[in-house]
Image: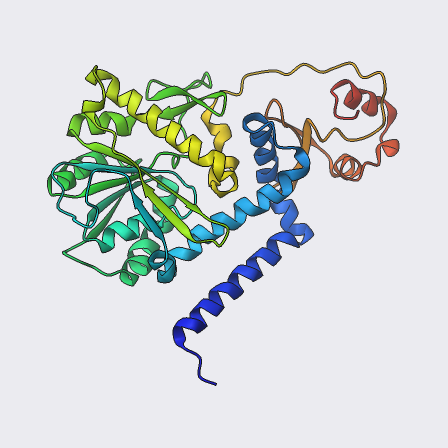
Length: 374
């Protein structure tokens, strides 16, 4: 029986999806242990930012998040994912026309099909400069240029240029490219290697914003750059529906004329973008990669007090603590204070399996005092 190549490709895609879902839902013990550090950070971050989600739902949330992250990488090689995407343009710009009257910055986040909007703009003839985190630059630049770009239709001299945010010469290259008609694409949540001072505080390149009822620190360099260039910022957010069809929404542009006090633009523009993002994220919580990394966005110099437990039931306190393995070392992790305590493998296994009665009495009393055993 003859099978259409396009249909065969769709069948292969569905097969790959099912295989990956099966792997996530039925992990091997060694895979669980490899992910235990990330999972511990993930649980702490959900506990802080989404306290309404019960801990019993964390595992399903984590699995769904990993699946969407994988899908974001996989679908960039599947041109049908782009062709089938729903494009919603709420800006005043005609996105089918790459000749724009002023500099543009497309600002996005790692949510939904976050790679596809770059492909969409490229196929519409845009010359694009992507500003990405150093780690992504080192690991993905060649793949994007050599494997993703050739899949796309190149109309009207479209181009991709990728710059490393840590490269000091990037700002000069960027200004030159903007003057030549390139538009800029940036992931505002992309810098996972945030720089801190020795006092564990954020320097003046960060601004505090309210995010899910917490104060986080984000960079506003894009707001400053837009101000200097006279550029409009177009927030771009993507999500997938229940059938995994992508919607890419180009929101109304944020421009200098939106603000009576022009000097407020570099900060207020970033605050506005994060407000748009929070509304989207509230609807599609598991489609954002950075639930694993958001602990880098705030100061972790707090101390949660222990409570006096007069009714010990001899159980590991999973409300406050987690266990993880990293580089063949074993740890208890405080989900409230983000503090790790090294332990030996013997104690790790006893806590992991709730074999509390086997723990030596003086150590057990110390663990009860710190609410590790309740």
